[in-house]
Image 1 (cartoon, one colour):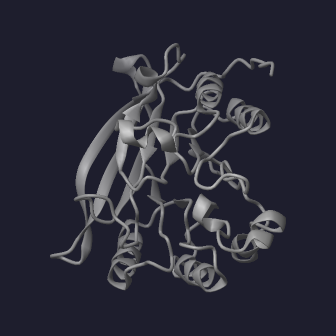
Image 2 (image 1 turned 180 degrees about the horizontal axis):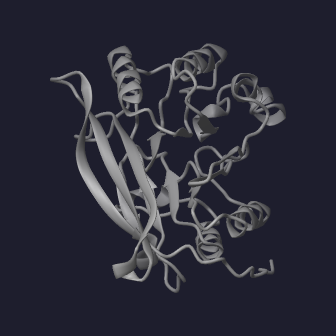
Image 3 (image 1 turned 90 degrees about the vertical axis):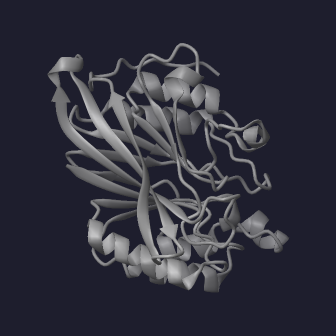
Length: 285
């Protein structure tokens, strides 16, 4: 069994210290194989906020992490920095690679930088990024759960959130499905949910799921949803009774103000298609 913890929209600079402590206790209890931070690590991309984020990651000890930037991780009030070196503070603490990957016999996780200095909040994925990710997916092992991480969502549950959808998502979802992707992790809108992309996008060739996380640590929560993270458990074995389908569970863990701890409040059992080698398809445009 492989365990991945998705943490999103930490917004260091607005973090709640008691929630930070509770999340570190959860990580210690779960011992995940990987922690994914899916963007908006800081509130305003300032050095001290990134320093706090780095201290949090360091507190995870030897646990591997994969970090992608969000729109809040680019300076907003410093036009020169936003234009000339938008990722300087992010790269100073998390390294030069803005699109990191993690690979093990059971996991292939590919980060995609969907932020753009010329966009305020919106995200975008280019054809070059789509093709790069597809090539990595097509080379995956049959035993690997194949995950793509973006910051902005590829699908939403509410009409008012459609303005936050990732630009270029239609081509990306279709291409990544053909390449064998299983999950697309995202954040940005501080709402946790799981959606079947094979029911949302017409003509997908396999079952694929959008897994969205809430805000893990910030007081900038939405509605009645408190701080929230996702725990993804994957069993690489297949079910002979379901055409060789694989099984993955996505658990939503919310912070309890009463108990000052993260507690599991929802569970989604996802059926994934058998991991057949994908056939490479070249897109024009």
